[in-house]
Length: 280
Image 1 (cartoon, rainbow, N blue to C red):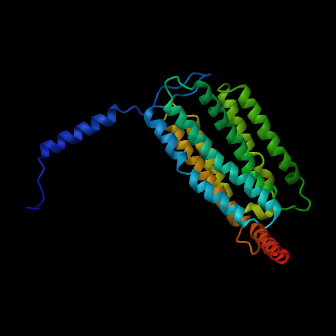
Image 2 (spheres, rainbow, N blue to C red):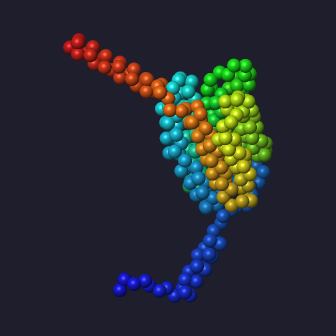
Image 3 (tube, rainbow, N blue to C red):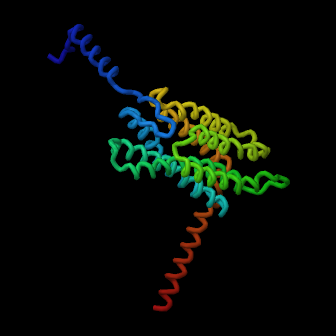
């Protein structure tokens, strides 16, 4: 009793064969979408799309809070809020869209899915602009002309991209992708031109991850779970850039602005309590 049970090798072979048959019956990929239509993922692709961005929602929230806590000046606090919020919304909006798309994939809630799809694409423009924002808003550099210009231009580019995307949704898809690349690469020349920023490898690795991910972004219907793979490249690129922002722009500050505000608030409450006791 309690000894190992020997399994019939023929039964094991049959079980393995049935498992292989089940894997072969799984639909890993649908056919390519037409020019003016969105790609319809299979069940496996739906699940992969939800998971590959959903798992980053909580880390994005914690990362945003860490930047806000480390902010040692008001410009840094604003940058942390803008960038941290966009980082959180990027993964949240994508996860909600893909979840709704899966749950109501049989023609239900068509209008809601369309709105969420548009928001999902628009968040890409917002996130690109917000990723540059901490670098462009960090501190003035004497003699630099591009930095002040890019602070405004990057948001103008995001606004133009969103307007275009809303008007021509799911049309001229390669042109839309080209806009993403131009907006993602263009402002980087202003940052790389700054001596203090030129030797930050995380910026280059993050940019490379985004560029490689475009291959899979345009491969729906050609590569199984291509969109989910693109999600992973987005997460990798965001991770590299977050690491660069955290360690180069938000090192551990001796006097974080929120900590100073908390001290001031505590002193105010203490004075208010003393004043109340005196009046009593």
